[in-house]
Image: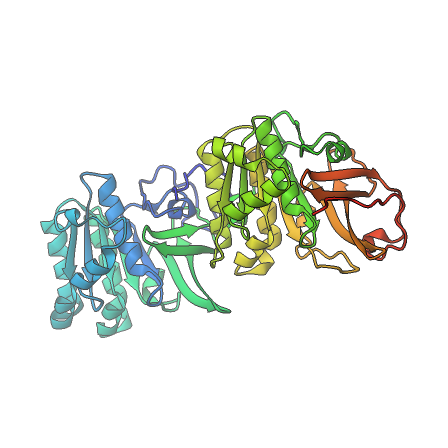
Length: 515
């Protein structure tokens, strides 16, 4: 995944009064980390010559964080040099073996530009003063070092004779960083944020690794960051072969949409003549629509028709789904005469399938937004087949209203016309949306329903709301056959039709070849 640029649309995570030191930090030199999106959270990276504490339990990613930061730093600049000091943690040989599978790891940088040294013998034999002397000598001998990482700081605290001695040690580290023109990172096992060194350092970052239900979830929180604004709260963390990837909360990145649309609006049709007539020619461009319906009512086929009609008009489209893999989706379209294959082969429609794994909600949103940003074009179409896939990926369900609002706003800003599906219960007398907030964040809601008459199942379609446009309020029957989706003319009113308790349906006719 690509790293977010600093000028990405987003909120100022805290006010100047909230940030330690407050005020603008535009003139303060920054140390960019190149850890995906961390620099965005920190509004440009760490302030140079600062001292920062990174806390977290075993397995939360502290060592990967420190090494990734260092290797990315020396990769970016030919003059950059880093020193990585280990205390009572894993041996250097084991650490390097574990890191060798990471893409950021470059053994050619060792030892000239990425220098590992063990500080524990000096700490054990000579105490805190011995470790300070070792650090001073190392930085003096390796002139030009601009990043210092001390991994395993809890060993220093345990060896300190008093709490005051430990605080003085941290204070000396700060002075050493300033004199050596070096940015220092203190890595330690998780402890209370009120601990001794936390009042002295310039910033505090916490990594957590916890079970929420059956899921293991890593998160990053910036608790303190002197001299700069930053994005507050918890942010998702992934660790894979690329290293650490951080996903800021979607609702805090995209909570400041434009006050009004600037592009000229157009109608984005579905290619179904009678249905497009119901919505005055199509959805307004840059809007979002929800297709609600029970399983099998035709939501996916209606969404695919939307993409294919756009491709026929030269508008690019993306299918983003969670449940049906691409081969099955293509076969499904062929069965009803939707020419999906041609447009996939031409590249005007892309199929993106999320396999049934434990996804992270912000990661899914970031992946989709980045894909749309890579090649910005006007009048693009997006079909998200199963908004419940985002809900299933959410660790905190109460985030969904804010997430959906920010996510759909960002899609509008990219001039993307979005259609999403939402699954309703099968054969229920009540219409109850699993995500009630979805109805508030989309402009258009289309309801697809089953009804039963004389032992036959029929499909009905109705438009429940459509902002910014007139629309046909009548209920229509529709069929799905090898000819595709066909929406009939209005069959008139039917008693309690939307409750699923229809008794008489004027205008219904038997349909041959219906699927």
